[in-house]
Amino acid sequence: MKQKGNIQSNPAALLKNLKVKSKREANLFFSLCENGENFTHSKKLIEALNRSGLKSNDNRLQNLFRSLEAHGDKIVFEDFINIIRKSGLLVEKALRGQLVLPDFINFSKKIDKIFDEVKTIISVDV
Image (cartoon, rainbow, N blue to C red; front, side, top):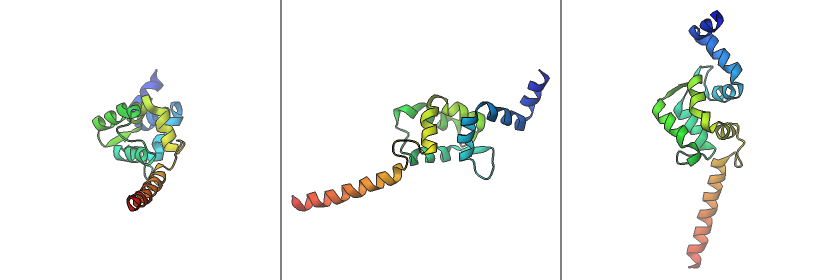
């Protein structure tokens, strides 16, 4: 009992305990943190999801984006776990580049280029 009280009153010990219990989430979270900080920003998580092709209008991530909006800018580890809880596997795959299209932005640019080329060909033929 006394040890549990010490963990709860010591933020560093609490964070270490959470990392042990949630190693997968800890790896994801700290991949978003900069300069060894113990927090990240909502914007950084949103940008990482967007780079992988996941947008705020994705039905699978509605709860996550609502939680991010309600939460504010600074996210600590405990909050990160709560925010990604319902869509953790999808978020994990996105952050690790393990989606079907891991480099969605590059893929999207290529599709746009192909579209522009085809549009030019079609408009010339008409």
